[in-house]
Image 1 (cartoon, one colour):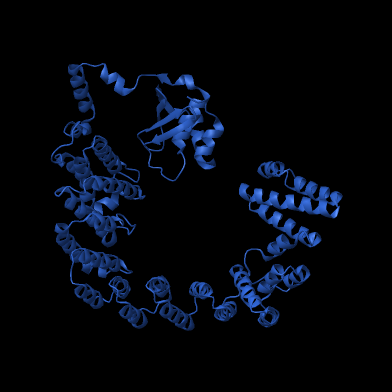
Image 2 (tube, rainbow, N blue to C red):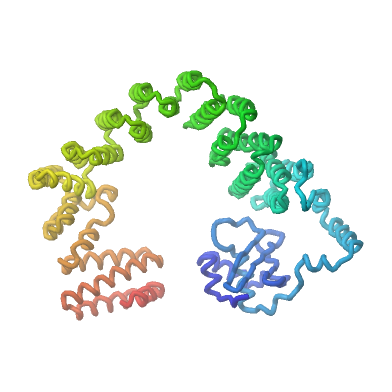
Length: 585
């Protein structure tokens, strides 16, 4: 086991959790400390009545893993784990060496184990259901195990109202059941494992309101995601099982539908339809189709495109089921699912009809942008470009324009590229679009005239932000600095961009160091004012640039005065002083 340091503990927890855990450590909140092999364990008296059980596994490289029974789940070690680790760092001898539980039990006789288990159940009656839980065997069972015990456990907890905000009863029960399922999958009994996972999902769906009463922090939803991932793995192993496969299809599809209609819309089991399409057999399709159609009214009442997702799934099922294509297409027309209709028409080789659908029924810029590349792939690039240009005439979109320019460049149509680049710069002046227009115009020998037009338009529009950036691109440093003086400081930051003066200073500092120095000093002061370490780091980096610029101008004495002032003025900010030392300023 590696020797731990306080710094390692801090890095794992973050400053806030570390400080809180340090208080627990100073308050002697850690007790019942033991060490089992390379695992340390203890109880920590926190804010709840019952103490939290904390554990950490330490290997040769350091802290391998940690766990705590508290509800904290926001990244990094919780304060209780911090207290445990600090206790171990300061006094490892406090942890009594004890054998692993498995080793202790192995030394007991059968009769002793029976007596021991009886006493445990008498003391903790909630352990009694564990006695009825099936355990995996060496060979996979011919039929799945009876899962009633697992169902009763989770049903019982769901029916009970949560005991406060930090009640982890349902999470603990789910985790215990998940662990049981994992033991079956590790033994190769995928049928039994999949049945146990399915029980968890079925009970949650059946008791939606109760589930959300228990899941006040989203932790249980994450556990469901873990169950679904495990069920995917089971399904891969059971794809040829004519009995279990359709049952798992039904369960996963039910969760996907439930998440859309009654859950949080968090994309639970969102990959289930794709997996079903990959593994489905003809005899499975009627039941799946009926399951989706039964949910159709609820899905259509929802805002957004929930039904689109399932309409496409149904169409794919129909194609696998060799349903007449005209029937599939007609249903999509009746449902007004035109994007899916467009895609299926292309899949059936009916490109003329697809173009008509796109022209007459799909006019949204985003939707067309998504579908036009498919038209190109189908050999209808002329139609795609025509529709793309018609789209930006109605509603300009820079992404659509970029796509059109790329397609015309690939065709070698330089005149159209130049025309579109001009339109793009007019509609959306930016450094990127300026450079694109410069390249297109230069190829045709028209850049000088075009540049004059751009400068005149931007000057008339008083778009000094863009003008300054253009002068930077063309390395006209003095014009960039003089234009910067005309920028209205009240202009919104989204328009002016992030710190235009800093942008000008950064680009021209080697050519105009005397102008750049005051800007870097101003921004260093602003970063320090935030009073956070990452901003101190930025301030130090700015000051390092100032140091180099003074060295470039031969004014080392002036630099010494500047840094002396910063050091003295902010002497009560130790974190800043550390960052200045680290930057060697």
